[in-house]
Length: 472
Image (cartoon, rainbow, N blue to C red; front, top):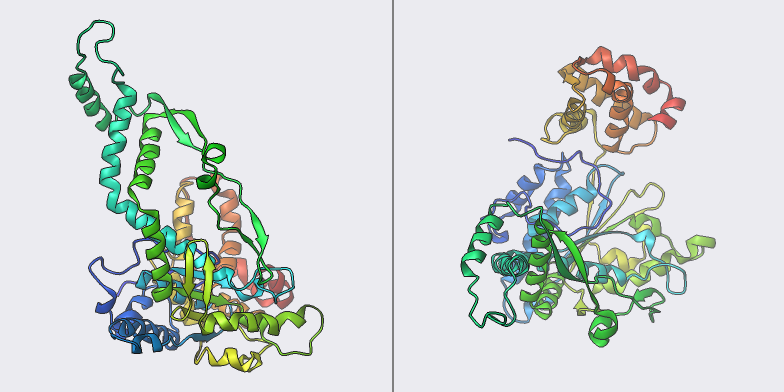
């Protein structure tokens, strides 16, 4: 089976999942049994079978709950998951791919960003507000795709009006009616053929930046006030201005404007909140950084406070957002941490109880590195071949060369800090540093990357623990 996974590293951004999720377009969530969910995750993440099975069961249980009618469905709560493993072994990637598989709102957030009430920092409820914004963006994008044909037609009519203006008073000068239909149809043909794309037109655009107000919330954080100043004072903030753009740019701007008019914003908010409540997924990273009990001093004193602030959200509470109230009872929380210093038992008992499923992710081995380098369609090896090909340099990675890279990466991880698949990035960059620098002067060259090539550039660094600690 062809692998299409990433390099196994963890992402650090919170984004809304795109329409494409690696799942066949006709595959619905109810078509995916846990075995099929694991099979889909196998395309993106190497190894970690226990973690994949745990999240697959959690996702299937979400669907099972939705099939139950009556009050019992409200009493079935998600079994949150605690992933334990070193950095770079695929914890975030599993959660992110799971959210794409379920086409659900997904947010990755670091627990260390939050602080106890009374300290400077974000309050824990802000993660729910961020998740709602992601969900709103997802729903809006889907609505835009639904109305895009109508919006495009309306934008075309507005463009034609700009290119061939209809007189406000037909026949004002001649006393006769003016029929511009034939002219407009000719322009329509030229417009659709792209022959007018570079012509300049002047359109009216709305200022998209409005002042925002911030206030201290009862939870001790600083949040944006959910007030629409544009609606309250349209004369002051709802300003429009004329802007000269090309026809091609105007078509896109007008299409977006028309799409916004066709979308019911209240329905978007209602649907977005429903998705968060029934299908939201929050990946709470670095949970081990807030693991600790009372008795510490300095920065550590707020750790238990953060856990107690997280507790009601994970247990189930109502959070106020500018789009409406959100219940967190059925949001799936996946927490993760390396737990090198702290232990899961260092979390307060109440929070431990809200993460009943615990899975340990194994450190990546040399064999895992070899699979990461060879199996993915977008592997690092293929990325560097494509990058240097732009300079006319042909990189020819031999099997023994790739094995040597995997061997050195595994050895450095073992001797220094284990940073998982991220070590491949540092090893590959150091290996090809000289070639990347000289590439503009090497046009047409064919470089063979075999075991001798790899060892000649990396062996000394890999063997010197002090040097590799700082360089690799």
